[in-house]
Length: 217
Length: 279
Image 1 (cartoon, rainbow over the protein chains, first blue to last red):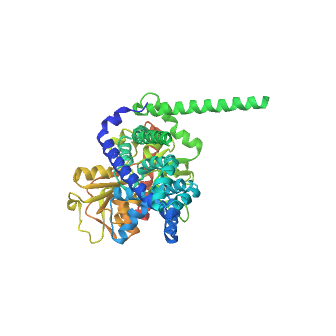
Image 2 (spheres, helix red, strand yellow; image 1 turned 180 degrees about the vertical axis):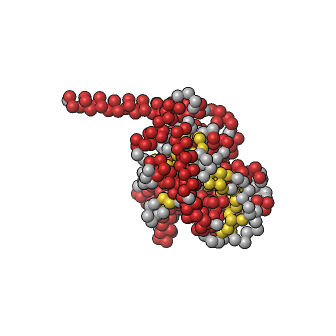
Image 3 (cartoon, rainbow over the protein chains, first blue to last red; image 1 turned 90 degrees about the horizontal axis):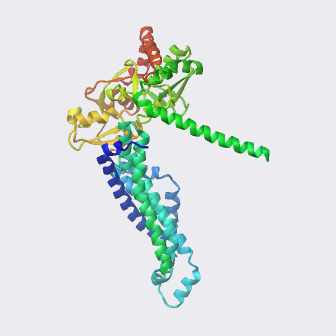
């Protein structure tokens, strides 16, 4: 049974980290969703250079470790004269990294709609945007939600990368508490519990959304 | 069929054994805090355990220039702490090759010692009252003090130049953080997992100064001459060798070993080899 007094004694520190983890996760989640959607649109675009950019982005970013993505922002950018804090670098890095996975999930969803539907929609006079909005996307979104929620849960957990770059997140303060109390195991049990407080509702919400869309479909 | 049931039995037994073992070890960890009960008998075997094993297992740093650094080319771990540990292995076991080095960080070293992963910690570890509650310390084997590393030409010349908003870089779990917080409560402190990351952050301009024990800072200044140690050390931080609480015989033989190293001049040789260069 973990020693609850550790959590009580360092409650303020835990909460400081917890709120920063929430901020980093929310910002990176919204950002990666927006960026990932743009990249996905690039990847399926009929304009070749856009497709190249999209593919290059996805293949480059998702195939290197997140740690190194943030590393570039934190240690690399200063040599170009741009110095950003650990929190900003961690959050932006997380956003850029997750966007590549989000893009793939969205692309897969769109691609799973038979091209015959698009052709039929275009033949009946809808523009490309209208076809997307009224025919493809409403169907694709249902397919996309499970993998997308996976990515967002990963994102919340991956936000622990901030701890490595003095980003004042939950893991950063968890390390501090652990090194003060020497109760390594107990300290991180509470860190894990706080991550669950964020990820479990996210899982649950995704499931609910999935169900609701299935009904309306 | 018969063979299979024997296998099943074996697997079940293996599980039981694992459960029993983990049960025991976690129990041991729980009792570690009020050690007086049964540990002297257990601790009394610490030295003989090492002798019968024929090998001293020592936790050292792998990332700390001059004290314990793994050379990526050769794979060897070298430094002041490593040489002290080897010299102690020679005193205790009669042979300085009868040693196994394990990597520790400021964060992992005490849990590893208390888990019996290592026999002792020789890893730039400052003797503090709080740590004395967790482990036993040998006599002081190195007198360090906290200082500041800055880029040459920095306006920071001493601890007095650290003001509100000055970004001070340090390593998680080190006493340096508490010290700087006590001296300059409103400085911004950024903590990293190890010295290399903290030094990289200083180089990248993520902070104004890096603070830790002077000996470690000298090592960084040797590594990159664009950086220098400024000001007098503002703390007195003696390094000690940490040993699991209650292992009195091991502690005694470590202290005897240290004394012999001082008497024979071996200590001075090791000191000159590593620290002399950084000064």
